[in-house]
Amino acid sequence: MSQTTRYLRTLTFLATIFCLSTGLTAGQAGTGSIRGRVVQPNGNPLSIAVQVRLESIRGVKSTAFTDNQGNFSFFGLTPGLYEVVVDSDTRQDGGNVNVEVFPNSPSIVTVILRERVPESVKKTSVSAGELSQKVPSAARKEFERASNASKEGKIDLAITHYRKAIEIYPNFLMARNDLGARLMAQDRLDEAAEELRVAITIDPKAFNPRLNMGMVLVKQHQFAEAAAQLRNAVSLDATSASAHFYLGLALVGIDDSDQAEKEFKAAHNLGGSEYALALFHLGELYLSRGEREAALKAFEKYLSESPQAPNAAHVRQMIALLK
Image (cartoon, rainbow, N blue to C red; front, side):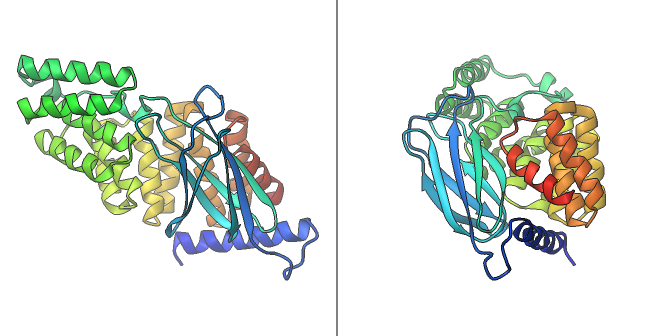
């Protein structure tokens, strides 16, 4: 039985418990709904209309648009696990949140948009190849312009300058990596993968392109290749919480739950409360294996470290059902 099958069976079981706890019979149990709001990184409502995607394990399920207060809704949903996604564009960076849908009960979510420069873009390790490159001054100037534009939130302009730097010096490793990271932040995954593969070819021992490539592949659901890239990343920098976290996600995708558990634990041990999300994924993993007590502890610890998490209300529901 696959990890996915076990997980879906667990969700069905929990949905049944939920129906009984609310007085619903099996015949009354029906579809669920999601009601949500998109807010800016500072917590203010989003005043412009943006598209919201609803995804499940089979891909895109539906789309909706926010109103002038950032509100959106999805109805008639089969109970289960979904992901609500707001894509990045030229005006703002995206955001996403996992949500559990229960029968005959609305699930309430808040999608918090990310800051302009995502965490994945920050340098965590620089290879000798990056430091030793003799980059022409013209290419270096374009790279600096790209970096400044990125800091100002002008991502499209940054991408233009990164491409100019690469045109001048095709083997510009840092420019290839940073361009790939910015393209990934805009969900231009195929383009990002193209740049990052070249960067890895230029220097196979460079950590950042391996990490970013693994993240792109996880987003593309190419979990086997993602796991290979992220294992390489971990071997290059075993202190990176991000590398362990995304390797955990990739391993879940290929049904290697035992190793995924180790990676999520490593991510949390290295990253602390900044990687509390690893605890949430540990809870899901334990739940899929029928380890209710371990799942309960992981979810409770997740809420203790991240009480204001966008999915906090739904985790509390899960905790109530597991007790």
